[in-house]
Image (tube, rainbow, N blue to C red):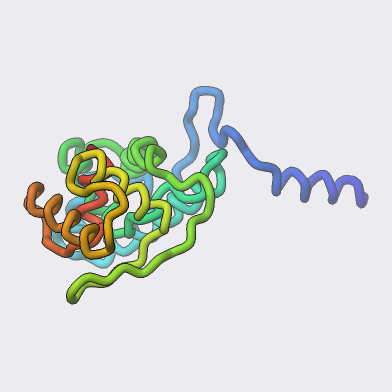
Length: 190
Protein backbone atom coordinates (compact mmCIF):
# COMPACT_ATOMS: atom_id res chain seq x y z
CA UNK A 1 0.00 0.00 0.00
CA UNK A 2 2.83 2.43 0.88
CA UNK A 3 4.43 1.69 -2.50
CA UNK A 4 1.22 2.59 -4.35
CA UNK A 5 0.86 5.85 -2.41
CA UNK A 6 4.52 6.68 -3.08
CA UNK A 7 4.08 6.03 -6.83
CA UNK A 8 0.92 8.16 -6.97
CA UNK A 9 2.55 11.06 -5.11
CA UNK A 10 5.68 10.80 -7.24
CA UNK A 11 3.58 10.86 -10.42
CA UNK A 12 1.73 13.97 -9.27
CA UNK A 13 4.94 15.93 -8.80
CA UNK A 14 6.85 14.77 -11.87
CA UNK A 15 7.36 17.47 -14.50
CA UNK A 16 5.08 16.93 -17.47
CA UNK A 17 6.81 17.78 -20.74
CA UNK A 18 3.66 17.48 -22.82
CA UNK A 19 0.38 18.13 -21.09
CA UNK A 20 -1.75 17.34 -24.13
CA UNK A 21 -2.83 14.41 -26.24
CA UNK A 22 -0.93 13.01 -29.22
CA UNK A 23 -2.51 15.67 -31.48
CA UNK A 24 -1.46 18.51 -29.18
CA UNK A 25 -5.04 19.09 -27.98
CA UNK A 26 -5.96 19.61 -24.35
CA UNK A 27 -9.06 20.49 -22.35
CA UNK A 28 -9.46 24.19 -21.70
CA UNK A 29 -11.17 24.94 -18.41
CA UNK A 30 -13.11 28.04 -17.49
CA UNK A 31 -13.17 31.31 -19.34
CA UNK A 32 -10.11 30.44 -21.45
CA UNK A 33 -12.32 28.43 -23.80
CA UNK A 34 -14.55 31.31 -24.87
CA UNK A 35 -14.11 33.21 -28.12
CA UNK A 36 -11.91 36.25 -28.31
CA UNK A 37 -14.94 38.40 -29.08
CA UNK A 38 -16.23 37.76 -25.54
CA UNK A 39 -12.92 39.04 -24.14
CA UNK A 40 -12.84 42.19 -26.29
CA UNK A 41 -16.47 42.99 -25.43
CA UNK A 42 -15.77 42.58 -21.71
CA UNK A 43 -12.71 44.85 -21.94
CA UNK A 44 -14.57 47.47 -24.01
CA UNK A 45 -17.52 47.52 -21.58
CA UNK A 46 -15.27 47.35 -18.50
CA UNK A 47 -17.45 44.42 -17.45
CA UNK A 48 -16.61 42.43 -14.30
CA UNK A 49 -16.09 39.38 -16.52
CA UNK A 50 -12.92 41.13 -17.67
CA UNK A 51 -11.41 40.45 -14.22
CA UNK A 52 -11.92 36.71 -14.75
CA UNK A 53 -9.83 36.94 -17.91
CA UNK A 54 -7.08 38.65 -15.90
CA UNK A 55 -7.09 35.76 -13.45
CA UNK A 56 -6.91 33.30 -16.32
CA UNK A 57 -3.94 35.18 -17.82
CA UNK A 58 -2.08 35.10 -14.50
CA UNK A 59 -2.81 31.39 -14.08
CA UNK A 60 -1.62 30.69 -17.61
CA UNK A 61 1.64 32.57 -17.03
CA UNK A 62 2.22 30.78 -13.71
CA UNK A 63 1.54 27.39 -15.32
CA UNK A 64 3.91 28.23 -18.17
CA UNK A 65 6.61 29.25 -15.68
CA UNK A 66 6.16 25.95 -13.85
CA UNK A 67 5.97 23.65 -16.86
CA UNK A 68 8.37 25.13 -19.42
CA UNK A 69 11.90 23.82 -19.19
CA UNK A 70 14.76 26.25 -18.60
CA UNK A 71 12.34 29.09 -17.81
CA UNK A 72 11.92 31.03 -14.59
CA UNK A 73 9.49 33.72 -15.83
CA UNK A 74 8.02 34.16 -19.32
CA UNK A 75 6.66 37.60 -18.41
CA UNK A 76 9.28 39.16 -16.11
CA UNK A 77 8.29 42.78 -16.70
CA UNK A 78 4.85 42.57 -18.30
CA UNK A 79 1.91 43.31 -16.02
CA UNK A 80 -1.37 41.45 -16.40
CA UNK A 81 -2.87 44.59 -17.93
CA UNK A 82 -0.04 44.82 -20.49
CA UNK A 83 -0.59 41.19 -21.47
CA UNK A 84 -4.35 41.80 -21.66
CA UNK A 85 -3.76 44.74 -24.00
CA UNK A 86 -1.55 42.63 -26.26
CA UNK A 87 -4.16 39.86 -26.26
CA UNK A 88 -6.90 42.42 -26.96
CA UNK A 89 -5.08 43.57 -30.11
CA UNK A 90 -4.82 39.98 -31.36
CA UNK A 91 -8.41 39.18 -30.43
CA UNK A 92 -9.70 42.22 -32.34
CA UNK A 93 -8.06 40.79 -35.48
CA UNK A 94 -9.37 37.24 -34.91
CA UNK A 95 -12.56 37.40 -32.82
CA UNK A 96 -13.68 33.83 -33.52
CA UNK A 97 -10.65 31.99 -32.10
CA UNK A 98 -10.47 30.83 -28.48
CA UNK A 99 -8.99 33.19 -25.90
CA UNK A 100 -6.61 30.41 -24.80
CA UNK A 101 -5.34 30.01 -28.36
CA UNK A 102 -4.18 33.63 -28.38
CA UNK A 103 -2.41 33.04 -25.05
CA UNK A 104 -0.64 30.02 -26.54
CA UNK A 105 0.62 32.20 -29.38
CA UNK A 106 1.65 34.94 -26.97
CA UNK A 107 3.60 32.43 -24.89
CA UNK A 108 5.85 31.75 -27.90
CA UNK A 109 6.56 35.48 -28.26
CA UNK A 110 7.24 35.90 -24.55
CA UNK A 111 9.78 33.09 -24.52
CA UNK A 112 12.19 35.30 -26.48
CA UNK A 113 12.68 37.62 -23.49
CA UNK A 114 11.88 35.14 -20.72
CA UNK A 115 14.14 34.96 -17.71
CA UNK A 116 15.93 31.64 -17.52
CA UNK A 117 16.85 32.22 -13.86
CA UNK A 118 15.54 34.39 -11.05
CA UNK A 119 16.65 38.03 -11.16
CA UNK A 120 16.53 40.48 -8.28
CA UNK A 121 14.15 43.41 -8.57
CA UNK A 122 15.61 46.88 -8.65
CA UNK A 123 13.79 50.16 -8.13
CA UNK A 124 14.31 52.91 -10.70
CA UNK A 125 13.29 56.53 -10.26
CA UNK A 126 13.34 59.49 -12.61
CA UNK A 127 11.54 62.75 -11.93
CA UNK A 128 8.04 61.79 -10.74
CA UNK A 129 8.21 58.25 -12.15
CA UNK A 130 9.20 55.09 -10.29
CA UNK A 131 9.13 51.39 -11.11
CA UNK A 132 10.47 47.98 -10.11
CA UNK A 133 12.08 45.80 -12.76
CA UNK A 134 14.16 42.62 -12.81
CA UNK A 135 17.81 43.64 -12.95
CA UNK A 136 18.49 41.32 -15.90
CA UNK A 137 15.76 43.03 -17.96
CA UNK A 138 17.17 46.46 -17.09
CA UNK A 139 20.65 45.38 -18.21
CA UNK A 140 19.17 43.94 -21.43
CA UNK A 141 17.32 47.21 -22.14
CA UNK A 142 20.52 49.26 -21.64
CA UNK A 143 22.39 46.94 -24.01
CA UNK A 144 19.61 47.38 -26.58
CA UNK A 145 19.80 51.18 -26.27
CA UNK A 146 23.57 50.90 -26.82
CA UNK A 147 23.12 48.78 -29.96
CA UNK A 148 20.54 51.27 -31.26
CA UNK A 149 23.05 54.09 -30.54
CA UNK A 150 20.89 55.93 -28.02
CA UNK A 151 23.65 55.60 -25.44
CA UNK A 152 27.41 55.07 -25.30
CA UNK A 153 29.40 52.61 -23.24
CA UNK A 154 29.65 53.03 -19.44
CA UNK A 155 26.79 55.53 -19.13
CA UNK A 156 25.90 57.34 -15.93
CA UNK A 157 22.46 56.93 -14.41
CA UNK A 158 21.37 60.31 -15.80
CA UNK A 159 22.66 59.39 -19.29
CA UNK A 160 20.62 56.18 -19.12
CA UNK A 161 17.47 58.15 -18.23
CA UNK A 162 18.16 60.56 -21.11
CA UNK A 163 18.66 57.60 -23.47
CA UNK A 164 15.27 56.18 -22.47
CA UNK A 165 13.73 59.62 -23.02
CA UNK A 166 15.30 59.90 -26.48
CA UNK A 167 14.11 56.42 -27.42
CA UNK A 168 10.60 57.13 -26.10
CA UNK A 169 10.45 60.39 -28.04
CA UNK A 170 11.57 58.62 -31.24
CA UNK A 171 8.67 56.13 -30.84
CA UNK A 172 6.03 58.61 -29.62
CA UNK A 173 5.82 56.82 -26.27
CA UNK A 174 5.05 58.40 -22.90
CA UNK A 175 8.16 60.25 -21.74
CA UNK A 176 9.08 58.62 -18.42
CA UNK A 177 12.86 58.26 -18.80
CA UNK A 178 12.49 54.71 -17.49
CA UNK A 179 12.06 51.25 -19.06
CA UNK A 180 8.29 51.17 -18.48
CA UNK A 181 5.87 48.67 -20.03
CA UNK A 182 5.39 50.51 -23.34
CA UNK A 183 9.09 51.25 -23.71
CA UNK A 184 10.19 47.67 -23.05
CA UNK A 185 7.55 46.22 -25.36
CA UNK A 186 8.84 48.39 -28.22
CA UNK A 187 12.54 48.30 -27.34
CA UNK A 188 12.91 44.56 -26.82
CA UNK A 189 10.88 43.77 -29.94
CA UNK A 190 13.32 45.69 -32.19
